Length: 222
Image: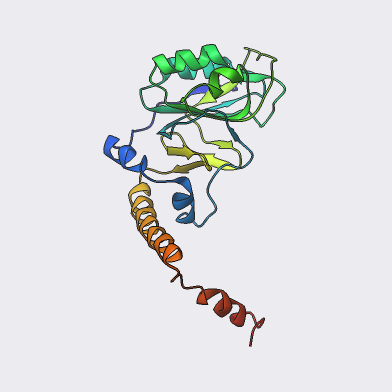
């Protein structure tokens, strides 16, 4: 074993039906039902459109180095999301147009990169979901070390291998497969409540009494 290089076995995959159901849910409704504490911060969405739902293929790499990212793509299964902990360093791009094109041939459905990308035009013209910390023209090193199928941190979000990753215009969240059905059900109920609230707002009957009730509870209003 070479220390600093590890490739763990891939974890079990969640049911395809569960992933399909999550495509119908927006990330605010998911994060609201995870105590509003789960989700990436500081990553930019580069693709012009397209919902991200897939299974986390996690990579932890030395900042600015993509050797083990290349190996992860060789191991990728259809439906995987490449989730890379690059330490948030943006001096060297970890992925670009060629890796995006290869990832798509492997069935990878998106990138979540706590690091930089390059060839930005290829991503912004695409519906291939890509979230990253920043961009630079400078390419990566290919020396390692790095680890595959390990817990990673991306934009303050801990992602475990095999987690379900969901991303849209508002950001990225990750759910454990075990907790996902309960969170999905709660998110659907919230969507129904918010749809009714929108109807009430448009009809001029939206109940705002909770605002003054909250302020009375804090002693602001009598």
